[in-house]
Length: 84
Figure 1 (cartoon, rainbow, N blue to C red):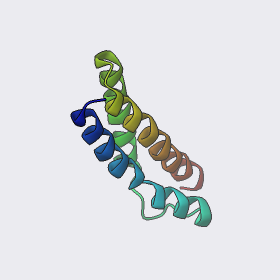
Figure 2: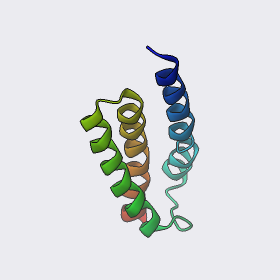
Figure 3: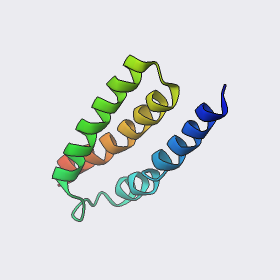
Figure 4: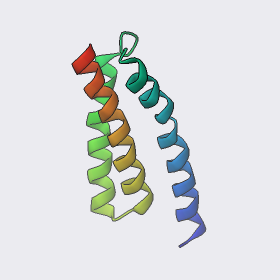
């Protein structure tokens, strides 16, 4: 694994892990009143496109980060739609 790939994985970890506190708070409180539905719809759409791009390029940092971020953002979006 190259240092560039490691750098990408570290960056991916940081930006993906940033969603975890919001996921946990939303899970615990079931409150999504202050979360923008439009923002999360756009974010999830972008993540799907980034994931497709990463798969096409076979780029591990793009695939790993966008898979996990899509999972976290998707959970928040699910709670927003369910608990609105």
